[in-house]
Length: 116
Image (cartoon, rainbow, N blue to C red):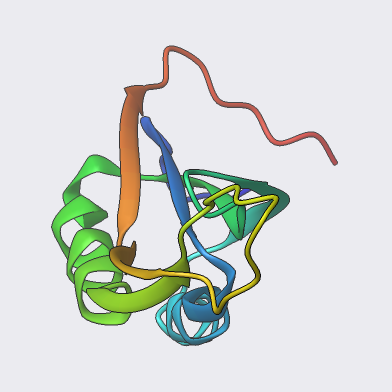
């Protein structure tokens, strides 16, 4: 997960929108963070998401969170409302929904070992 002999005492699981994940992962890589990516989908819009597993020293957590906040801001978008009307045909109603952002879990790591 983490290269080199840097101490790893926290595991961050960050789930972000796929539309924002590219910018975030590029930024993290440039700043020396290493992540394992897991593709998924979910939420009310069934939107594609990416979960990043990031091992790090706790002293680097504020910097990581800053990158996530700057790359994964929430935004508004319109999505079709699901309305069933068998007798009538019309354009679907659109509702405004919040998208983007991130869900972040920070876990303490009891033991980290990098096998070579």
